[in-house]
Image (tube, rainbow, N blue to C red; front, side, top):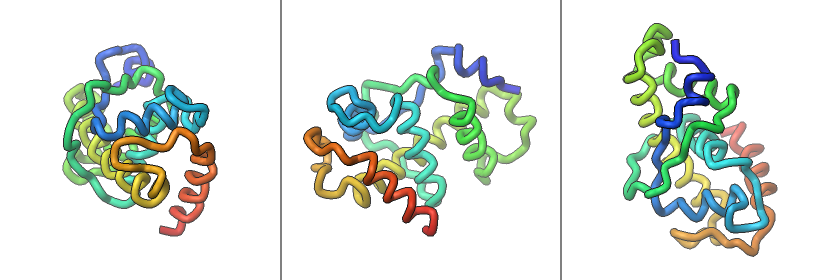
Length: 158
């Protein structure tokens, strides 16, 4: 079985994101703004993947970013979320014995990338709307956290 410590320590586990969301990752993690909503990029990635998975929408990355996200700062709870997404997928299969295979984890991460891609599109269309111009997110606005909480509240009934 792939253990949490193995993923946390292994630097080679990375997830890809779409280049057009680079700025969004930077703003929401406080890299380029004072509005830090997420502690790190992997937290935002897991959040977006959860949205895509909940809505059952998976989309291919259009233009891969040069900045792949390291899974290294992933928490046990975030890893459990990723594993839940993986085992619930019809194509990957839900047999826990598959976790013995490193290839299964790689396929699962690629699936999470597709869900995160869809989740980011949902966030841009439904949450950030006019504050997102297709490539940058307004850095002057400071209530993204409140906007995301409203989204989560309404999403629970989706």
